Length: 305
Image 1 (tube, helix red, strand yellow):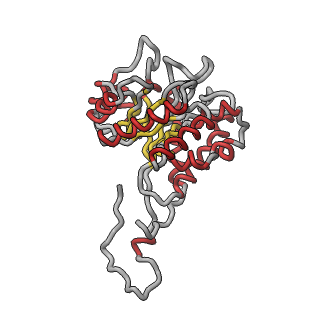
Image 2 (cartoon, one colour; image 1 turned 90 degrees about the vertical axis):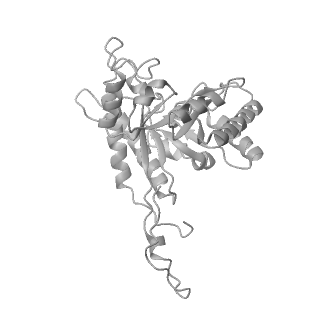
């Protein structure tokens, strides 16, 4: 986390202008994590890349880290950061995945919570227990919005967030994967950001994001066509991505944004048989997100920092 310079003397109390170091832009970082799902059985089940080759490809593509459930192979990832993910339901051991992720050097953990038909009260209690373990282990968590989990709809996610806040007296950290909400709503191109930026309480609570290109009928769409050009559907999604990143960049905060261009390759596959090369698509999304982020202006540093 960058620190603001204190090398300049403070102005006198009669000067109503803020100190120079409080006028400087805040540089907020965008950390992009490649999911190992993109390279599962890649390029084919028989010719799947070795772990060393997967990690090398992720580094060479310019990713900041890797996203995966805890597994021992991650110890060989080198300098790549690690963002962990487990699925947790009532009765499961919460501590074990947190400890495993922490031991592997994870910077945070993303939790898929319960089932689509789990009782709300039970899920609020589970989220509280997860928060307690997160605090004890010292590993920040976020609850992911995901299909076939309790948070597969905006309404269920909002009810969970409000119930947690009522009990815990603080917001529930979220990992927003808007692709599932878009499919639930069958959103039309041009309306993605307008619709998915609501309710604002969910967007404000998000500390992680899964940025898988989607439309209103598919939670994963092809990025590049057979000639390597960006598909029309992906260009529609880029309008949403630019609006989201502009919103995040404008926030006067220093914490990095943790984001995963989460395109799946196999087991399970979200793509269709007519889709192109998964890793080429992932790398194209990575490049575009980086370019969008660089174009966004940084906000002025708030006086409170």
